Image 1 (cartoon, rainbow, N blue to C red):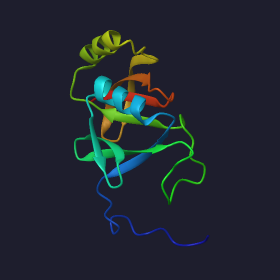
Image 2 (image 1 turned 90 degrees about the vertical axis):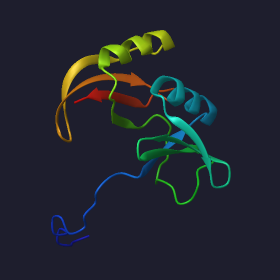
Image 3 (image 1 turned 30 degrees about the vertical axis):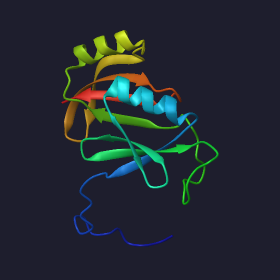
Length: 135
């Protein structure tokens, strides 16, 4: 495909509304994201599940039972997401310890969309990598 770049600013994309995670077990995913990350589990549409936080949500697709249209190669465990938390990282790390969720890496300094962040990395039940960060 050959086209000129859309002029900067004219499309005016302002935020992410939702994204989709393909998972092996929707119930286990809901439990993890609710207990460990404090996300609200919501039901919408035809008994579909999503994880709500702030002004965003994560829709969940059951592996091999995805809704159409879907990604070209839906796979559980292929996501790498950075989530900004208002909870100080030492407090989050203590919470992970109580929940039996190991810290993969961190705290470590990284670069977020708005500048430097302090991050820790954990994995969800499908082994998606979750970076939890503070500005």
